Length: 157
Image (tube, rainbow, N blue to C red; front, side, top):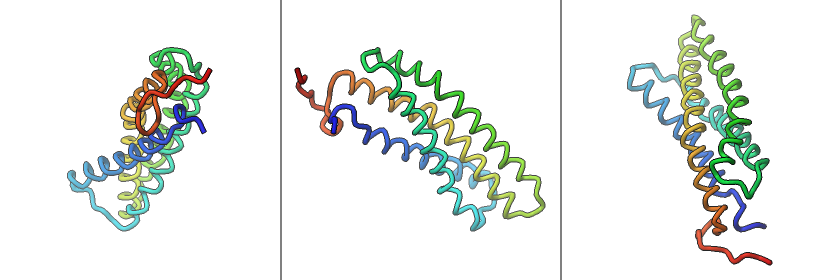
């Protein structure tokens, strides 16, 4: 309903962040010569779920900040709340998948390597790329601009 506070682009860039993580991790591992097996083809859906979950945590923490605070303060509050949660879940997920490398099955090893590395990239992209876009979106909101056209919206009195 609110044409200024809506988060359409934030959601789009959150999904894009997860997609970039998959591309980066798969590209790195393929470049390094890691075998790609068919079970690895299901990993992007897992990474999308994890990335979107992290995005929701960050947006939820952003929504709990004071609207009239400066963007820098809102980002600091957002990271203060969200970074701990995202970091702990990411570390446990990565650890779980990298432990899977000890299995004697090659296809499981490949799946675990690709998925664990993708989760690591997903974390890095969420903290950097998505966080930067969240700040840009905050600046747009602070200047009372429309979510699509970025034109100034008249103040309602």
